[in-house]
Length: 75
Image (cartoon, rainbow, N blue to C red; front, side, top):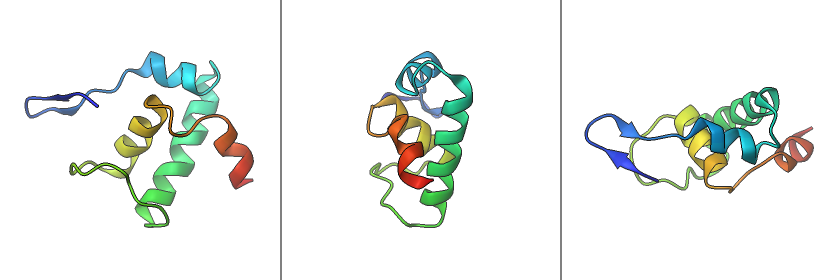
């Protein structure tokens, strides 16, 4: 995770799309489900910095912690 000045973490959207199987729609679904889960405190964010749930979800996707298989698990 790269932290820049005061703008917060930098998210590489192309890498996120690749981690989601090359499909932007799946990326949106994965990020939405994970962000809701994080906001409800079902899982630990895994990041110690103060970022909101959608950013944490995208960072997890970018780092390869969750991917397309995540959708099958939550169906």
